[in-house]
Image (cartoon, rainbow, N blue to C red; front, side, top):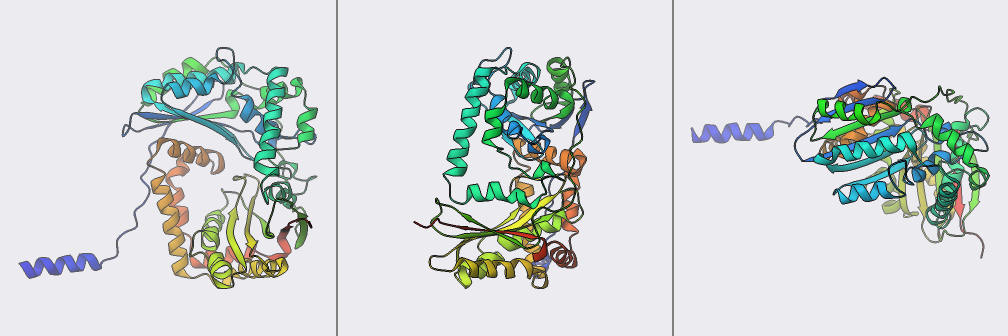
Length: 445
């Protein structure tokens, strides 16, 4: 018997373990008569609740001469409403023991807080009050206009490479045919200077309303509780007006193996970024592109790091970029960045980066693919451990994949990607004639 038990144990250890899959998430959904969509995930593993609002508005909804408004409202939304004073939103959340924030991407603006579950009513009331009655005054506009300018100076203009990337990558899109993605999220400072209070109020009335918002609540709650409180706080907010559809023709911008040289006085070393237009998250090729980004540029064992940092030593740092400003329903961006090592000619770095990027199709192997799948699976599984992460993943599925239930089918899309898919996708999209290359170099001193 002892030998039999040891034999069975050895056999069990020799068998390959089935890959762990993300835990399925049970979602309850309902929609208020004013158009507010609500998704609830009941999870009593911790006494916290994440309250997460996505507005279907981002830089894609802006028009020429009026850019930067979506990002401006990321700031304006904390300047007070009918029953909440300036900056009091965050103070109330923190006093309740919670955390909060917001962010802007091309296709959406989000506002989120995680609070003890017995303060769910506070978080919902705060979100409803600013949706109903945000204070948009000349004083608040000027204050936040200056805050955005300072943020631009701090995070973009005074950082090496940032201004070149943020201002130049939108050149992948044609301004006439796809203005939605042909300008930066932070927008033009001249446009913000020209904005009037009426301009900003009109933008708010159009884009920040129940029928443009999705509310996700995850945590120590019940769907019945969320339904009752949501109806109480949001139910009498009127729907906003119908909006013009966002147009984006698939025609590329500069592309066509275009190379642009940009001087950057903040950079001490030259850098190269090469990017191409790709597809939106709902496209069948998106999972393969996401896995390819991992293979090329994630971690010490990535292809770019092995070739250019540890191998030729032409670069001090490399990185793959997949939708660097956030996902977009109309298109996608894929590329790679390399910062040159001291004394290495930037054009030789550009040539090496092009070889690694455009010749990768014939060199991907099954082991790399499996490793990339494991990395994606691990991130997704760990992301199911926090209510805030589940809320964001559910919002992503709803907006970019067409249904909140796609949260539970996304793993199958990634698992189904084959080596042949990876090679086909690399050959299809990573082509020099589709590319834009930025060569960023320090100014002559």
